[in-house]
View (tube, rainbow, N blue to C red):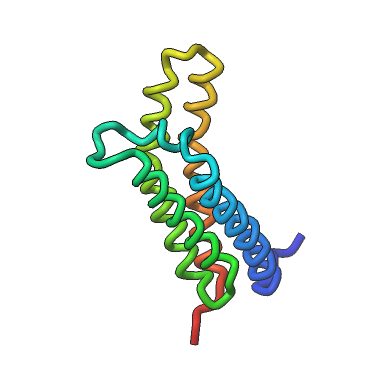
Amino acid sequence: MTAPSTLENTTRSQATAYRMGALLVGMGALHFVAPKPFDGIVPEELPGSARFYTYASGVGEVVTGAALLVPRTRRLGALAAVALFVSVFPANINMVRLWWPKGWAARIAALARLPLQVPMVTTALKIYRNSPGVN
């Protein structure tokens, strides 16, 4: 078996970028359509209203997703995705704290989200590395 060619890596990366971009645009839009679940995991320790953070993260997801969908902005979008995934990690930790008293099923669901951030970050970094730079 031979190593994938640069073209195969680029094509695979484009498809991955498109999937990640579409997912982020969809999830970002959901922050506006159904904000309450997102409000519920915003750490209380943050200043201001939870809704502000819900909307801000929704905007961040839509903009990042859109950047991943456009080849010209894909590299920047990939870096923005890394920053986004890292920045929402405290909300995922807070979800564990909030859901812990809800029983084992909720605990497992909340805990399962934490390690999922790692492949999301590494995938965004692969998209960055395999996307051509802008001339």
